[in-house]
Image (tube, rainbow, N blue to C red):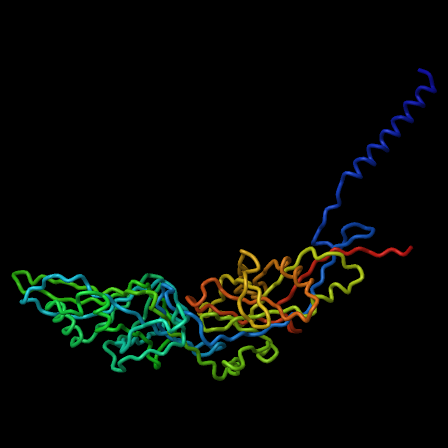
Length: 440
């Protein structure tokens, strides 16, 4: 072969190789590795910053709706951190459909039956005495409202018509059965057998028998239990015949829109003692470095990021790529009896501390570490929210409000360690695109 021809072939091969390499390189995009420091080795980086301060506070609401929740909450317990908590419940009953009762029938007993809905909070091994009272007034909505609130005061006859101490096993679906006054039972039985006017329809019956209030005796209590909204008052009687046939009449719960839970909290002697209707916000620096979350007793948590816009002052800042909020409870604050909420929601809020729209459809899932406790945390992607807050140029009082999906139906609570200098604190992680400035 001609030597010059070999040289030409070699030159073409080298040129082809160079062009192929250049073409391959120009079509390949550098992948961003959020776990590393550099995007590449020249001008662009992904920088992680976790030193931006956050401001935490506890928000107190003295009243909130507790009607029509589908759960009758009764009990009391003493929380070593959050104080003394109690709940009573009130509801209306409807009469059974009228039937003929023979004159030879005899009254036997009257009982109240409540079935556990398997929810509870506190120590279930402690006996609680439940007291039953008869309401002196019908339940109703106050003008301009469509709910009954936790702090509603209802008038009732202070003489209990029934009382019972019991240890319940909510996980087994236990029922609480309380024997009620024989005098009341005999009166109801007589009126039913005589087909009195007050037994003919629901409204007339409620005008006569206005309902029940169930409380936990102040001298007892280790937990609050949830009962299903199918409570009933059962009247037992028998017909005197050859077999003494036993009969039962059920007065079932009705008008569930008016059923409500009267929830109270006594925070005397706790860091939250200063909270009231006048002082409804308490900074974490005034409460031992923590913010208190328990919506069932009116406690919510607010977090703000007052120095967020300092990110824009960084000369290499180009764009916020990712933001993650990690919320850490105090390690000693949760136990099997006083559990953390399994999920938390984040809502936008402002200087008024009202709950706005959810920042996403996701809830912060809880990772619980009962052994070392260092890994227990909630985590949230707050990229979209903080990106919008970077555009707020005025004095920004906006923040995020923490709530739980169950609202007032569960007493799960969390004592959240703020973003101060203590170890194990809550923190914000920001990842931003950094462009290195070049000198001309």
